[in-house]
Every structure is written in C-alpha cells, then in structure tokens.
Length: 127
Image 1 (cartoon, rainbow, N blue to C red):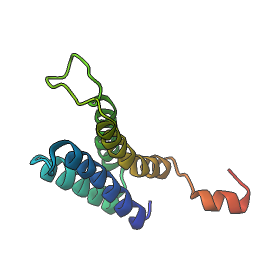
Image 2: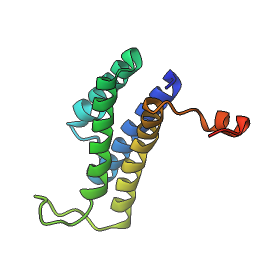
Image 3: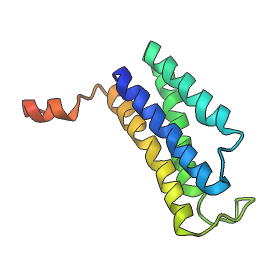
Image 4: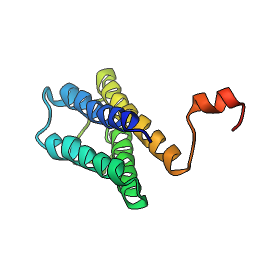
C-alpha cells in the first residue's frame, strides 16, 4: 500500500472517531488521544515502515475492533452499562465512525492479498 493511502486511511479512521465523539460528547473524549490518535498513527507507521504480517494483523485488528464497536455500541443492548441515544444523529455519528475505518481496512486487506489498484485491473482487463 502506498504511503498516501496509508495516511489517508489512517486520517479517515481518526476523523470518524472524532465525528462520533463530537456528536455524542460535544468534545473529543479524553481517551481519543491514546486510542484514536496514538494507536492508529503508531500502527500505520509500523506497517508503513515494515509492511510485515505482524504489523498488518495488529493494524487490521485495531480497525476491526473499531468497526465492530461503532456498529454495535449504538444498539440498546442489555450488555452495555449505558443506554445509547436512539436518535438519527447518533446513528449517523456511528455510521460515520464505522465508515471511517473501511478504507484503510480495505486497502490493508488488498495489500496483504497482493491486490492491485482497481484502475490497473480495469485498464488491463484482468482480474
């Protein structure tokens, strides 16, 4: 994966979390500085520098954890110690949070599978 996609995907994941926090709390939550900024940047730098299997698994795991969390913590399930708001704006905030993780997760998956850019696939007519 090129560094531009890595940086853009990391930024999208971070901004998705920021959008959620701003809607839900009115500010960026205190834990964002660690889990929303330091972790994705550190993992992306590690993956960008090494591109190894371990870095890919850890970065992918962080992204999947955020994706699953964004999709499930908005639901009023009895397992949560909170009662999430059931409003359109709250669902939208969680959708933005989840969607922010998708580009980097997709590019990481394609990169580890040896996938090519869609443009290259279309232009050569190969899959």
